[in-house]
Length: 293
Image (cartoon, rainbow, N blue to C red):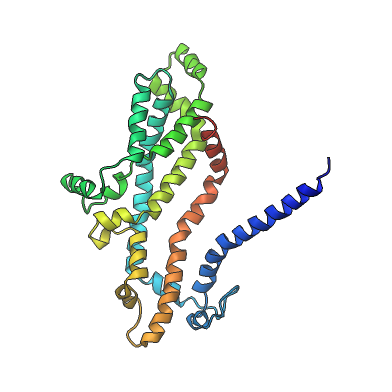
């Protein structure tokens, strides 16, 4: 059956709206890329709009020779890797347990979890708690803080409810399987999609986390990359340390903008590398985990 005139008009309007939204979302990223590779003077003259003007990688050269960037990279990779493993170690078993119909008090436990999504102790009581636990200004605060995201646990629980039927557990028990053996040898291998999605969610969360480091870390040697990036974007002293003293103030300001664009790109590279490896699991895991609540 062919499309009616109304269908054609509807499709045209949809394509126009989606094209505008795509342009609005993609162009800022594209501009940052071409600006980071352009001559700072060309940026100031407004010549960098849709293509690189005066190819220049001086900003990247200064970034790569800045020890703070590498320290931040090292810390962020450590926090993201270990933190994500801790998140998965907590989230996946908790979600599976809450998906089981035979768990006593399941609704009460779930209610307690959901309660924490809407109510918290506040920043000051949390800070006092972290200090009293001797986690202040330690790497562990970046790893343990937010060890369980309730929303992610709910999505994972729904995945298990849909994909791991009780009949499978009953059949395994007939063969002499224990609950632990069933979870480790059967459930986990069948849950690669949701594990990959949760790893991506948690990994991106750890990589972009700057607030925890800003509040609970004071040693710059422990700063994650996002806090270093924030300092570069907001504090002129950090930028001054990345420049030579024989440059005029105006030149320094122009080069500073180039450095800022370059730092943003450098901070995004790990996530751009990671995403293609979990993309094939992403849509499947999210859709299955969102079908049934």
